[in-house]
Each structure stands twice: as C-alpha cells, then as structure tokens.
Length: 193
Length: 98
Image 1: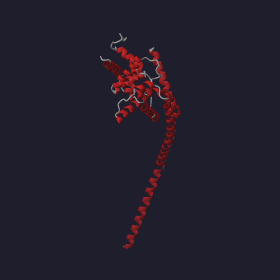
Image 2: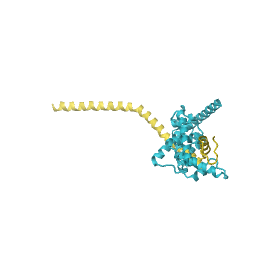
Image 3: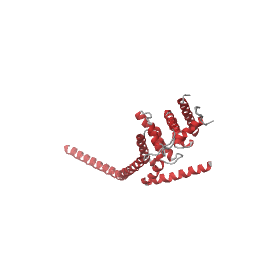
Image 4: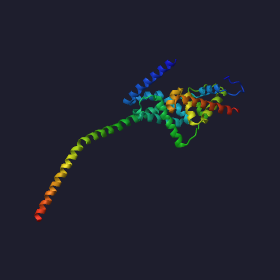
C-alpha cells in the first residue's frame, strides 16, 4: 500500500510537471492547473479567513500570483500544490497583518458552504457538534489552525504539510497532535468539564 | 472507549473523529471559477503585451552594444581633428602676432 501511494504521488508529480511545462509555454494551459487546485486553495483560505468574499478575493489573487510567477517555479522537492498553498499562506498572513482582522465567521454561512451540502434531516446534535468544532478550531492560533486545515480539510500528509509550512514532517506531526489536543480541551471546557 | 455515552465527556479519539468529520473541503462558488478563468485571459493578454517591449528592449540593447563602439571611435576622431585644427589655428595666430 505504501508503494502504491508512492507510485500515485510520483504519477501526480509527473502529471503536474507536464501541466506546468505546458502552461509555461502556453498560458491557456494554466486553466487545467487552476481547475485542478482551485478547491484546495479555496478550502484553505476559506477556513483561515472565515469570510466568503474575502476568501474569493484572496483565492483569485493566489492564482494571479501563481500565473505571473509560474516561470519561477521549478520542481525541486516542493510540489506545485505546496507552492500554491505557500502563496496562499503568505497572502492570508498579509491579509491578517494589513487588516488586523480576527475570524468573523458566521456559523450560518459555514453551514451553507459545507462541501456537498448537509442532509436536511441532519440531527440537532450533529449541527451542534459541527458548530462546536469550528468554534474550537477558530480559537486556535494561526499556525495550529493551518496545521489542522491542511491535515484534515486538505487531507494532506505530514510530509506535504511540512513542505507548505517549512517544517520537518516530525515537527508537523507534533503540531497536528498539539492542535488536536487544544481542540479537545476547548470542547471539554465548553461542555462544562 | 472512544464512544460517547450520553452525559459523558468526549474522549480524545472522539475529538479527532469530529475534526475529521467537520473540517472538510469546501466547494468554491461557481462564479469564482469563471472569475479566475477571465483573470487568466486578461492577464494572459497583458503578459504578451508586457513581454513584447522586453524583447524589443533586449534587441535595442544589442543594437546599442553594436553601434556604441563606432560612435566612440567617431567622437574620438572628431575630437582629435578639432584639437589639431585648434592647435593649428592658435600656432598660426601666434606666428602672425610675432
């Protein structure tokens, strides 16, 4: 299974490299790249800023930057998705720095944007749990939020997260664990523990 | 152990399960897909326009590199000629005054 995953990763990297070299020659080929990674970048930014319109603007800016600087990208151990998410991370950091904003997420909005939409008959308990989890994640410092979003919302491996965050895979593993512990204790505290 | 009984506190594995369950990918609004495609088209055209002057500028540099030595040589020869003439004029005027 490990070998299979590695083979899949290699195939993905090869496919990306081909797409990137095509996009460098013919800018129209960039469409295939952004279509492939749009959801990933948007998801990351959305969870970080918690505002739909801001997430849209920032996502557009990420792809604009990527488009303009595509010529600078060379595959040297950093995958294209990690490169994009680094741009996204820097953009979100600048956004926070410029505006000194905190999360202003509206819980109703979270519900509207849930991937695939929730079932209408979703129980009150599930709804409550979802709100609690999002509240707890929103309470974490940016680095811990980033680690959890990349690990769970993006379903990235520790090694991939390490590429984005500029840390070792081991450090990422510890950070993800600590972030989960923080969420755990926040939830426990909220339950009146 | 990870199962939550009514009224019991959540265990850590349960928290991990909840985070996994609720922190899921978000679909971008369809208008964003269109917007980025348009952005690519607009900037793609601009990029072509921007790349042209760069090419012209580069070819301009090559042209200057080729002709500047000739300009240098020509101005050197002109300066030498003018100095010689000036020297000639001043020596003639000196001779006349003597």
